[in-house]
Length: 420
Image (cartoon, rainbow, N blue to C red; front, side, top):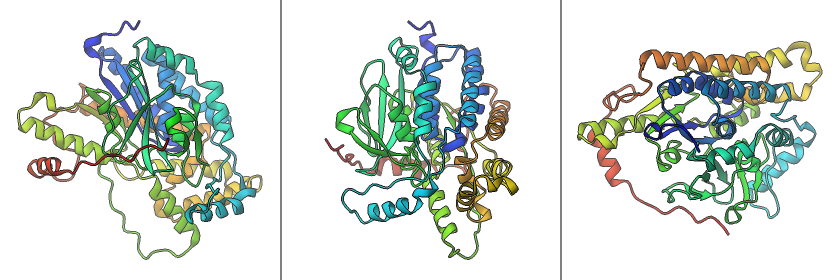
């Protein structure tokens, strides 16, 4: 049984990065987790989507170890992921078939399922070989962890579905936009959550039987990424985002008519980070609870994210250029071409290149960026947590009255049933 202090339980991690940006999450946690351990606070709930699902499962397998060892091993796993090219090789020869499948899938033709440009087999092999699932199950069964949750988007319904492994073998009640299912997590759930639309093929999930089907990146439709952690009983949240709290609106000028720009921007839209918006809602809710004198209504949180702009994109561009730029492109011309497609216009900042630029150098740069931003949070929040009375992370003060009114008027609707 776990020897952790029960009175200090209830901390949840919320991780929803995409592609190589999962290394940024681990960099941030390499600062936060040891500090929580020093304070006697235990992370007992792990929630992940996209590459965040890889991190949730990875940390679940290491939860019985000291925090410093956890993050050291997690960083080493990401470096190995990069060395093994586990992001998947480009299947350029199948590009015409992939485009035909996309068209058939869009038209609803029977028996047609959209594929992807990257081979998913290397990631599956990596998860099976390097992620200790027996340790995940032991840590949950022993009570070291209360729950590990992986969210994937069910293609049959277009809705996110949360696969939950918990010590109670149960799951929270369904929410407005999210269904929870108890299960014994495996690599297929993580691969389903991490399958980026159009870039990687959808992944098939066999268990639980009532949710059998095809799935893709869980972060794309998860508009309230904090919801699973709160539903699983989290009393405090550690949230890592890849976009700044105040993402600036960038004027893009006249729309481009080039196909590469249209496709790149379409992919960019699929990978919108909803974390910052949900943290803003939590901060406003905390303000409202404080204003109404409800001590039990607020949830303290720590939110690590880039300070401003889109700094992670340039890291990917630089890493991609070092690996495939100039004469190096001759060795992998198809990869260089796809890199041009994913880069699109210059104002996209190279965010999508994080999928291809999974190199040890890029991983190191992302880890360093995560550490830097986490250290900045700690300097401004020596006690780790943002107090419920602090203002929301928005440009203008939260309108508490309107927030409360919207919350009371919010319509309740039942989620679509999961096909049998």
